[in-house]
Image (cartoon, rainbow over all chains, first blue to last red; front, top):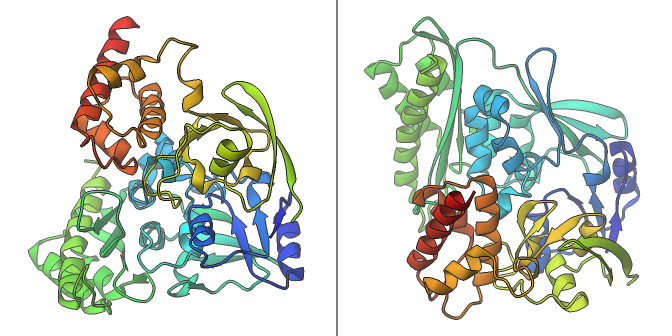
Length: 286
Length: 159
């Protein structure tokens, strides 16, 4: 295994381009090192991207949005009061991953590119409208988070592309987001169902909404019908019922001992309602 | 396989070692630097027995490569006592009998020290969540939690 420490993303993508074997990027390493340990794979080339300028910084842009460096760990995000105030749901998704020790290393981009359908931060990022910069041979392109995962363990990224930044939109006025997941215990487990809701209010009426589900399909997914059930309502009983139905209907889950298909569909509806209520009260400033 | 020369700081002292890039920081600490306080439990970041701090941040040293230690500051359980004087957490763990076999103890002590530096007045719930990634198979957690709460109270009084 060759260990590389490039100083730019272009250099990193260049190493990837000339690599003929298995290649992995190292930021927090909480997935890569586990795979190496389990002999699932040992990379021929391991590219440590932490020597690149800016990868450990959280920056508020002039437009009010946020740029998150690709090696910023979950703990660093949770300790950032202004970021937490703007996007509590994104923070909730990231913070639920692993233990305190894992939080000291794990990153949003690692969670995204590992490609698990149950990744907690991914539905939260999708609902928030997060995009990533991807550096490749033809320069930098922007991709919405929702377009990155293409199946379990698979992403849309080419072999010579590397995610080089995370961009969270400006929160704007009267907005709120929330992420909830169901696990069979209280901590340190993988989502059986995850649900993120991001919405904006015009007085008491929901004017914009996005609902995303995790762990109930081959990739996390945005549920357009669930958002439709919310928009134009005050989150009344009928809206909540329609939201739950739309969320359950969108599920295409696996059936296993941690959750049957029927259970996962039902819980998706329940979590969507609960997350919507939290997001709504946050949008109200409560 | 070419070994890489790493210079780093461990418990305030300069340290250097040669490592294969595939070796974990845990292996380097134990096998190269002979600091065997950090234990290997699961090797996959689930049990916390290998907890150390890396530039002040609590991590599992089994999920860090040795080569990543270049230029960093590492603290391990070996840096916790001041010579023969135990750290208050270590003293309280003995008083509360908060250990039996002791395999998980170095990781739990390193983790709780990091917690109390960040939050000197944690609730019991906060302590339990903070330590969710430190598994113990014999003491049973309650004595550990009591020792941590008692230490925190003492340290607050002393400060």
